[in-house]
Length: 157
Image 1 (cartoon, one colour):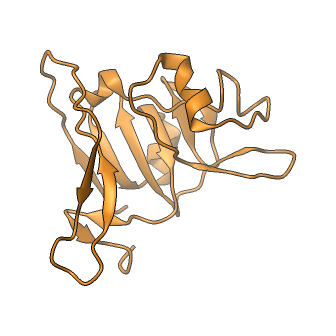
Image 2: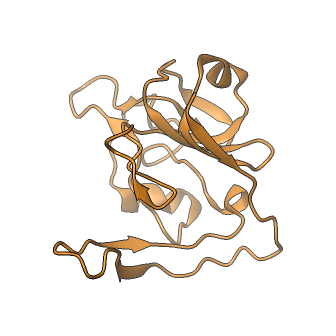
């Protein structure tokens, strides 16, 4: 499977640099703006959270990012993963939160972000074996790999 796995820095600090708003493609006809945050020690500071609270997916809870972030008093929170707005299954895809399997879709066609039990960062696609091994502290699925090594990867993903 196509993916990158990187060991992270296990320094002592868990400080998070506050979000920055920046111009990512300076000098182009269509500058692109966005937010980014630099996170130290992601295995200690990043969590994949269910909507609103523990068992939010099972209980079919819909929640804003702000409501969900209160579970762990998050400093920075972003929307991730997919959900079905119709009644029924709200959460979609593979989801692991703090080592607990929340949803297991067996889907390997979608890109994932995860933190493994040994603290490595996983970016990319998963094999069925990697999903079955359940070697993740945190895992969330997406659809396309947008940027890889600083380059647009959408056309190749």
